[in-house]
Image (cartoon, rainbow, N blue to C red; front, top):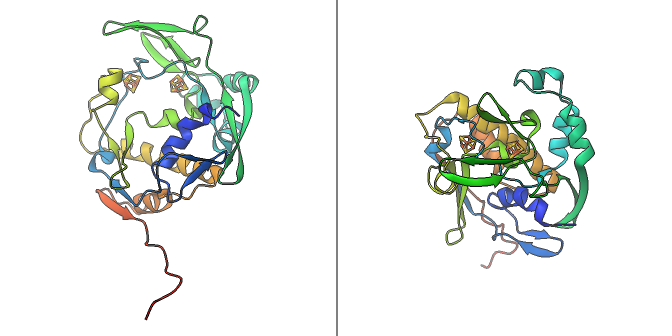
Length: 251
Ligand code: SF4
Ligand code: SF4
């Protein structure tokens, strides 16, 4: 398969994985993560100005998790965003199945390819040159919106939530950040105070990421992070990997 198209999903999972990842027999990403820090900023308010700057002309990829959302979609899921459920048929006509071997498990990725650069929808902004944009982006009332918003991939669902990984300490910190993404993409969003609505949305996307990890058969920190959040905890904390059990004790 084209490994490239599944990489976006695997890059998220790699940063919270408790186990090494072998993709088609080759080591992928970093060694297992030993510690995950849920940063205070995970609970901060974020917003979207719908400028379209973070929607490049790239492939869109789902696992079974995304397919289940598509199959279960209703008219209401789309009309409440001013969208049309009919787009599901377009996704179905574009999707190609790509199979990968992840740690010995056959995993199917569902891939909608990016447009050819000369056919893609293009946009320019006062602070950026014209660029080809995602196939699913469209203009409405001066804003740029996603036609597949209710069923978008996990790689699109958390635009500001970053998984910062330190290879030196085998630690990943999860939170929102102005640095990097906002600088590179020129995303205009500024983060506000603690906000339950934004937190709930991030929890929902972590649940979807967990379902994706299950599809890929990758053991991650996501279950304990979600358990902590579902208990109503709303403060920074640290999740540590349990030390490996000793098979023999030397007396
Ligand atoms: S760049 Fe920021 S404000 Fe613009 S669409 Fe993306 S998340 Fe929204
Ligand atoms: S699928 Fe939607 S959210 Fe994702 S890049 Fe395309 S337009 Fe943006």
